[in-house]
Image (cartoon, rainbow, N blue to C red; front, side, top):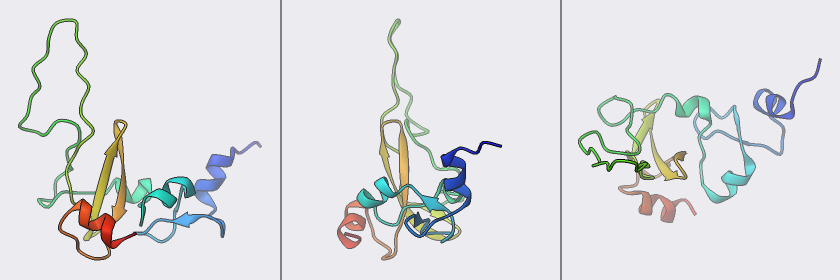
Length: 120
């Protein structure tokens, strides 16, 4: 039976892998981990909620509807809700290229800028 390298990577952490800062179990990709501190795995990230316990928004804020023009494709902006919480742990998201990375905050920072200052 053939098993892809990606499947093995997700199920069998190796010493060289960087693990999730929430569950301390699932590996996260080492390349982004070098650029973003305290990365959170996708499995933990799926449990993220905002301060009201709801699913965090990304792209367009809930109360902001973009005006569209005929024959124009309107792309959602690279922004979203911050901070988010996973299992009671405060986290910050860096929104980019239509997606995001989520990072655990060990210092209870007041902004994502402060988070980067404290975690680098």
